Image 1 (tube, one colour):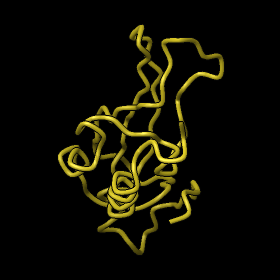
Image 2: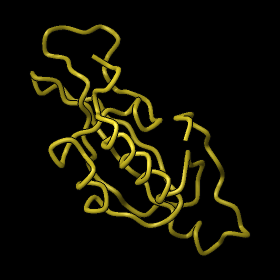
Image 3: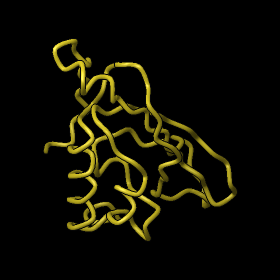
Length: 121
């Protein structure tokens, strides 16, 4: 697990898995409640309940620790921090996906085990 964003196209030969491609919407919300949204997809099935036990306070994560882009704006102020939230997971059409659902869960589990802020602050 090198943290690199490597999109893959859901292929026809994996039609069962491809039909279970999930779009994950996540957000960055600063202390002033300004929101920045992002999304990516994964192959396979998962739910927010699969992720929560491994998130910081069962809600937050640091995207750089799991290989997805941060949504923190380039121009920062005192309201900014590192934490992001998963907002929704829903079925989508096969598309470019950075990893499988199981890979995402493993990345989140590993980030939680090593410490969400380890080496970042």
